[in-house]
Amino acid sequence: MEYFQALGLEPKLALNLDDLKKCFYERSRQWHPDKFSRANPSERQRALDMTALINDAFRTLRDPVKRAEYFLKEKGIELSKDAPPELLEEVFELNMAIEESDRPQLESARERFAGILAEIDGQLQRLFESQDLDQIRSLLNRRRYISNLVREADKELNVHVSN
Image (tube, rainbow, N blue to C red):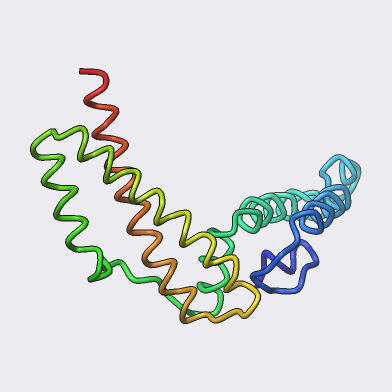
């Protein structure tokens, strides 16, 4: 769990964001390249590499969804690329609304999907404490797919606004 280690944190899904920021700033000061300006080239490069790693770690771990995806990946658990079967009807309806340029139906679908995303995010937060990786994986698979549907609806709604 390289990102957790880079920030000096225990690898876990439930993180206190204030603690995360504190660790980030401490490690950033520790490895800031200016502190190594007079060091030998390999130490300067190490400081640059650590700074990049610390920044990547912070960007990933501060976002609960990215943190969960990273955590699962590090545990060797891959997310599915297939559509969850329970969403196939929703996808069909969205595609029909897009094909028919049915703005009210697109807006309704977009709102429904955004609501589902909010529900999933709440469920993820609750599951982070238990670290039930199978359920987290299932929710992330669903979330990823629904997020794509929201993006598709947004894209179509924006296209229709500018026309």
